[in-house]
Length: 171
Image 1 (cartoon, rainbow, N blue to C red):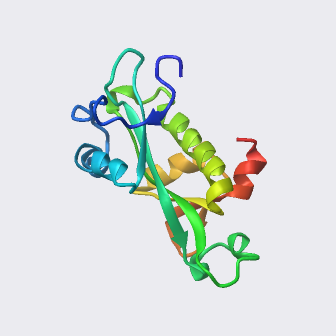
Image 2: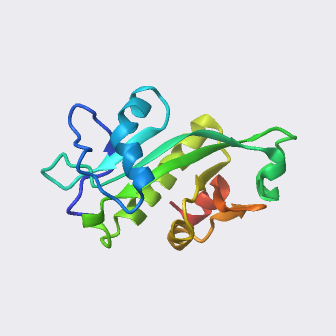
């Protein structure tokens, strides 16, 4: 991604968010109205990328801690954990500016989120990365990035990726 900065933490004093446009009105609105407060309040932590030489955010994602109910989790995640909720990291938001689509930014940001989640899990104890897909197209996108994502039983729009599966990919 030579034309873009390495994904890094949102800096509300520096990064421009108001011109961000994406295919999802909900994601666009979240970035413009809630990302700064979420980031500063230790709700979802926001990671952004910009074109080199610009502070205009063209792609972002947000991560936060989460849990998967034991009864709702795939069997592979429940082994050895008793009947307790399964600790996870939630990929809460992901967006790419419409003018920067088709350049691999979405895939790049997902892979960065996966790598960071794997690194965080060694300190936090999370067993999986989870994402709630807004649409079938979003679900298909995540599965195209990493086919190891699996749907939660009975919730086909919620995908999980075990830390064990992440480590097996070499990410």
